[in-house]
Picture 1 (tube, one colour):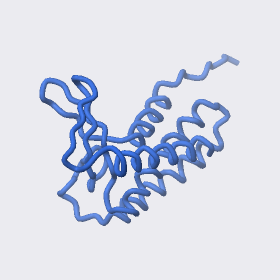
Picture 2: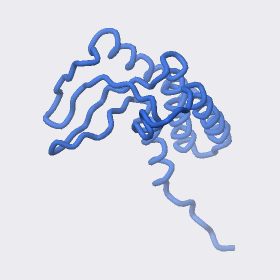
Picture 3: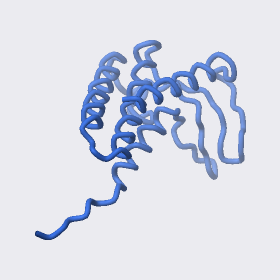
Length: 149
C-alpha cells in the first residue's frame, strides 16, 4: 500500500512540474540524442492505443484503471514475497496516477519521449514506467523452489 501511495504522489508531482514549470504543448526539450521532454495528452488507452479513435469517456477508462488498481492492491497485500508486493503496489500506483489525470483533465499527461533513427516510442510518463516495471518484475521473478516429497 505504501508503494502505491509513493507511486501516485511521485507521478502526480512529476506531471504537475512538467505542466506548470517546464513544458508548453509546443515545447520539445532535447535531453540526450535519443530522449526529449515533450508534452502530450493521451486520450486513448495505454501508450496511445486507440487515441483519437475511441469514444470511450475518460471516466470509464479511469474507472477500469481504478478497478485494476484495487485488485492489484488486494493481491499485493496477500503476497508473502515483499518484492512481488512492491511490484503490485507500483502497478496500482501507476494505474491510479493515470486515472487521476483522466478524471481531472480528460486525458493522461505524458512527457517522456524516447526516439531512435527517427522512430518515436509513444510519449509516456512515470506512471507508465511504474506499471511496466512492476509487470516486468512480476514476470521475471524466480520460480519458487519445489521440494520433492
